[in-house]
Image (cartoon, rainbow over all chains, first blue to last red; front, side, top):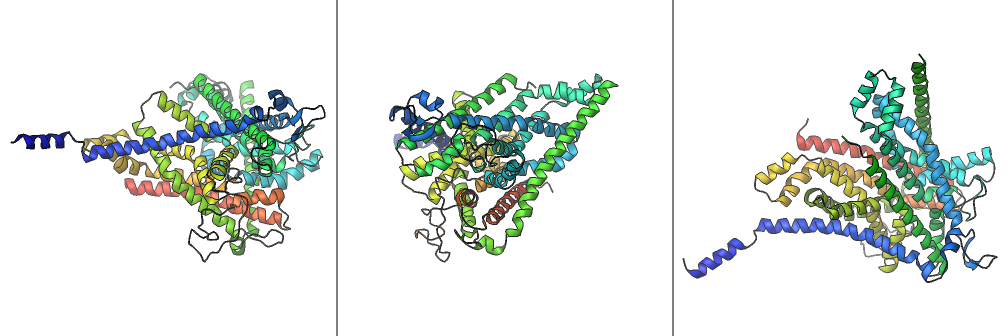
Length: 312
Length: 295
């Protein structure tokens, strides 16, 4: 064999095969898809944050005026001469509806989940499970519409006032987050090993003692995660709440007076402001608060997960 | 027996709670269908909406919802599949992978209104697409990606390693094993995940208000050239979807038959979600049977 042929052969042998090139191509494509998602997350945070802080950097609003001010009318001044960009009414409104909804929903959700897994698993799997799954998927505008046509008149007749307010928002969110919390709690209860229950019953504990002292106790981290998820959903929910809360950016005086949340002011206000104006910047700051809260809920879930991961 | 009666009492209370919840849920579904379905007719589903008079339909909104859904799924499926393949098949267990996983989790828990505002900022203002189908579909893609990626990753993870070893043992490269063996085996899960996320997209409104817009201009259903602005396929026209329509007419609508239109539209939405849910189960099972010859 001549030297030339040898070289040719060597280069052919050393070249990557078609399969190897295909392999590298596939790997790169899938990595690119993943990096694209990463890019999206980073740019959401950067974009919203850079718009959100311009209230403080460009328009020179102090953090105190924003977070502790109680009058929301960006572009004007309060009677005491401060800029009227107080976001406290919305922040309180958001926290109030979220906490109240979670408070009402939790006992119902845990009770239902226990019924579905411990007391009547057959009926739970056959009938309740699909219904809960369907309800998780019902769009929030439908909840809002039902809230508008059922809950608001109900609250008006029973508790007085216009019917729009924190209480109506709580009811609507309660029904909205109930399926979410139930289905996640069911998962948590199902992950408790069967022999825990058997051991407890063998010791002579009643069904209730087993549920209360063994099953619920060992599923606590999972249940807490479910509640936090429900709260995160309630906090970020926009349209359903916006439709029933009355949208008055005032400090909530009672549960039945019109109020507002971060999301409701955002959805109803964003279309009426001009990009770059103080009115608009202040809304983006509200969006930033919303983003931070969502990150906080995420952190909380991680923290609970790390503390109480189920050791198998 | 004090503990026995205590147990019986507690279980009675639990049953009561479960019954309460079932009643609430039954009322909800019953209310949607009983008040809504009588308003749904063929004319309602096909006629355009009327702003000031009674008797308008939701034809254009319904078309927009489906068009946006299809576009968003077309864009998000390859991206989510690629990401899921990398995460499940290639990614090593290191800080990079866990950072990405955390980011996907963050994206999935972001309120949809924040995603919508980002879409407004980037697509509508920065890229100058305006309130359009294109902006809406891209925003819905962002909204859809994290959950779709996760469900696809779960389906890929449920394929047993024996299959991968079989492929590699036959001399296929890793990527060939994935495309020819793992993905087809995971297909039932992937498809039901796609159908379920379609339901989520179909009902989404908050992410669309400031991206796809809140108006539904009249369409010329005889013109299917996507470059004409009044063609149904034009990606640069504003497109109010069914869910946005419900929100819009309830917050600022002035038509006299507002309640009828919204309850009819709600029933259509929920019915569509129900069909998505049922077909996800059905197709998942059918494809599984076909691929594994289980029947």
